[in-house]
Image (cartoon, rainbow, N blue to C red; front, side, top):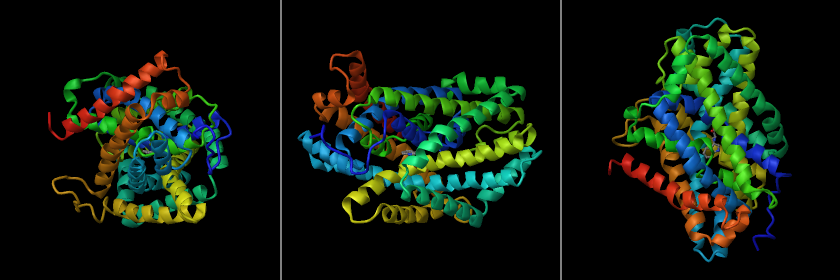
Length: 457
Ligand code: TRP
């Protein structure tokens, strides 16, 4: 049964490749674009601490659960959940959880592609040497004129989506491996160079204080929900992306070790991104709560003022685009895997059809930043379509998906199946910690944060 099942989509050649692919999924715009702007909007240190606690107590155990279910089912999340549920004597309706994930992936990729388009646009600006000597106000102006222009936003959103489709349709293994082994470490190194630059700006101390000395009085229910949502978003959890990567993981590899690496590298990248951005924010007197434009308004100032800034800036935005693509792949993969399992469609056909639908939704997300800025689709919620998509997918659907995954793995599956798949002994400390966090801590955290955000306590 589970032991002999084969993935029809192929397998990673080793555990290392899985770690790299999953890290490629995890490290993306979430770390470099979203994390810093959320820290800024939610007042700094206290948000960072809650975020780190969510990563460790909710994210890590749920990531182990996702990989475990994926590897046991060896199919797209929808079919993996169905197969494993049946085998465990449970209702095959657990597959609906897979559908929730596919839907979340749709919503996320629609706005993700818009931001991926910004990264591409900035790569072009770097190439045209448009950052040279740029002042903070001009950098804000550059971002403003991009997002304020419907045609620019849609053009770059479209280009990003085309790049993504070409890569996913071609089959991702080789390209993904190269991207993650060479390009991601390079992106990380450029971030480190910027941290070093940050130390020379005079804003570094302020930035450290802002990011790491918590003032819990600032923390609202909404920011705790945002921290939880970001923990899911940055680790690619709650929608089956990591589950589908787990489906291609050979049975010989250790899930706890692999997930430990992924979570560690993702978290480190986010923190380093914060340390690259906030010194500049404070040194030039920008507003940390500037919102989604934060990284795009600060980093050009850095590149415009440092030696080798031209080449560093160009590399940075090209690599940020690559990081966004390797993440985008995993947002598409659960749906693509399912459609190729369930229909006669080819991989390329499935990818194009799904991406076309997401691209359409992305148009609404993109226009909501300019032409449709005043449209409100949820009564009583003062957010444009982009904000609504971000909120519903990241802050509601991912934690909800994660909650159900945790319940499935730790309450509904037989413990023998779980220990067998995780490669842990029932009596081992590692397993007990996993069981405790996945049974109680993670579900309780998600439920409490939800109730609190609803104003119920
Ligand atoms: N984790 C990615 C980032 O930080 C985004 C992402 C990729 C994602 N796949 C996902 C988020 C699946 C949620 C679910 O940029």
